[in-house]
Image (cartoon, rainbow, N blue to C red):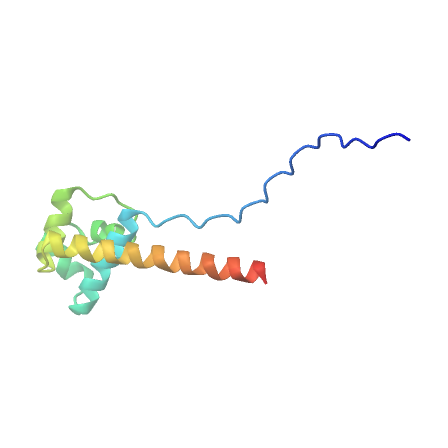
Length: 116
């Protein structure tokens, strides 16, 4: 009788990955934090912009993440909002970490859902 020999097969292609949500950009997180600080103070865009020495339009673009401000501009706006660069940077980092943690939690939840 003939023996059956298994022929080598191609490895199966890896399962397609779910598209990853892009991480937020620094300028987006910075803008959100600046807007939050301004709102917490109950200030209008024009008031903060005037104290910072920038136009209201430019400050609006920073807050919306449309501009990549220089470190001098960030310092000017932080000063107008009476926060230090260290405190502002720490708040932005905390927001970015929270976003990363949320993404990881969603990924774990999705993995458990797929396994079920």
